[in-house]
Length: 65
Image 1: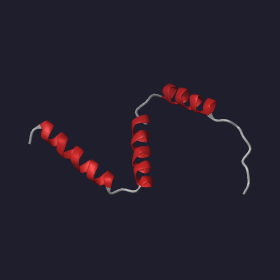
Image 2: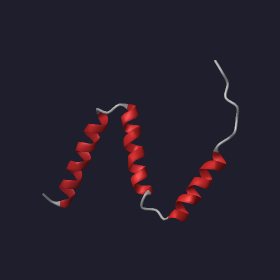
Image 3: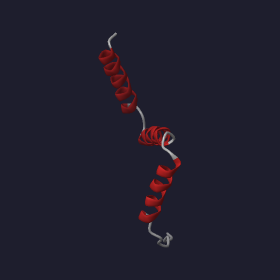
Image 4: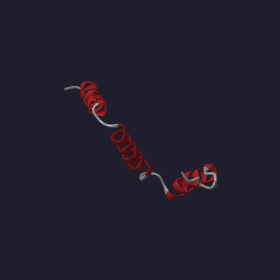
């Protein structure tokens, strides 16, 4: 099997599995993959990314039912 055939096979299997996965399962896969990618980043990059998240969050009071 060539590298391109292997890559296409992996892609086809991934697509099939994701089609049969619930939306919450897809979200879990995406979260896990992003955590894996972020684990490779140095601490200063993580701190910078985290500080940009805190700037986007607004502090509003929640409303009841």
